[in-house]
Image (cartoon, rainbow, N blue to C red; front, side, top):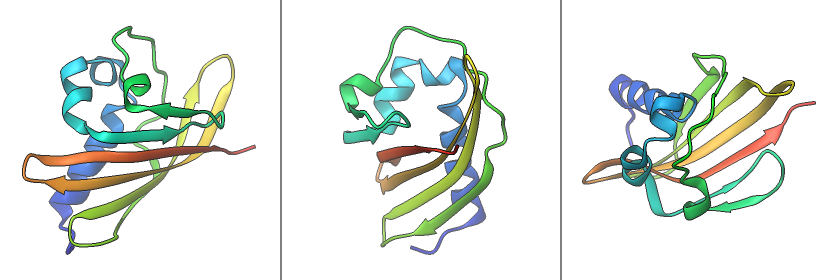
Length: 120
């Protein structure tokens, strides 16, 4: 896939939307952008199904935006890998290397997989 600047900006916006409470916990947003087979390897090491990733109860997300070291690379004609570093303040500052796999469908981009690996 030949990535355009528009694709990269759209993917950055989508990733950042999951770091903003108003969009991360919006059920319609989650239903639209998490693919039916989406799952996550969490920063904690826990595996989350799509159903577990979708949350209707909002929490405060105190993340540093824009996302650091944001990069996108094409994997095939309709699939990309996004990587970045996240910083979020919970009880303490948590940093992680993040990666997501996104597929471009006829309805737009959908996340298929996400992983967070703690940075110590």
